[in-house]
View (tube, rainbow, N blue to C red):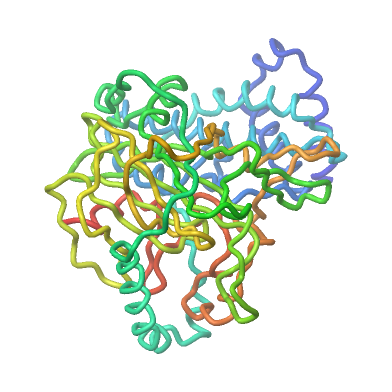
Length: 460
């Protein structure tokens, strides 16, 4: 009965002219948005980034918005939070609705977009902030795995291995570097982008660039990527899906998948620029190699101060592994952290505000082993930018769209052998590539790449 009612509601609403739909009551919009969510569920369309506030399907949440909800005290701040949360739900639903084509649902991507564009503002306008439950985003750890795996014991036993890993990764920064064979450069820019401080004129004081400002910022701070081997798996590329929905990587069109994020440090909201580079695989070194497999990558993040200077960089692989920190500001002092610590680059790094920097990647493992400068005489290719949300709705040869990630935020074909012996640490399918928001970055303790307070954990 519910399915019939929601299907009819979706069909009727999708056939309404936009002016008539705009005149519908709050109840009509509640039913329409609910019906859209139900259609996505029936079609098996799940997305780990598309979290909503319980009971409020028009309010999207993530760790940053959950934190900001607690900072929104004045009426202006609360209304601004509702707008940002609605914007997130709008983006999530728009991306997921692209995957509705040919799913046998009364909704089409076009009719879904009409409902999103019309009804989300209606629902946002009548939202009472004081009545909202506290936003909470589940962490990316499976507590039951830690319970079954006797985590206190296994974490203690793993201490030696974690310390050895830390020493090995630190040594790679000082060992003789591989010779770069090719570099991939972003488009050339002229001048300087607007400073984040100028983008924070809003009640929550969050730097919010518009589309052009965002593109200008991403262009200005984008790194050059140097590779030290000519094998295809060491060349960054563009992700696609085949007719079965399995990922492919084309190196004929190198791109960086980008998004922006925010963090909180010393009483200020700081803008972060994220650049993700994908590789077709990390080749296995042998039958017992637990780290090799299909797909690999590097995520490079730039955290900006209000004046546009870089505070620090950090990087992970899409599995959430190999968290490394590269201080830029001379006043930063590494904190005495609990659990397994990230690897800190041994010296201060150049500021991408003033000069282009280059990441030298080790062959096969794609570890960042040096931060250096571009080389004038090195063979050079250009790379472009693609919004990372494109990975959530990739076109397929059959005309449909599919996500690189499953409903749990994992790339199934990228599973690694290490999952068989690291499961007691509580990270599901350790080593598999993950969706933004799902990057657990510590085996001892709990830590996430998108934790709004991560900078305060990293630095004093």
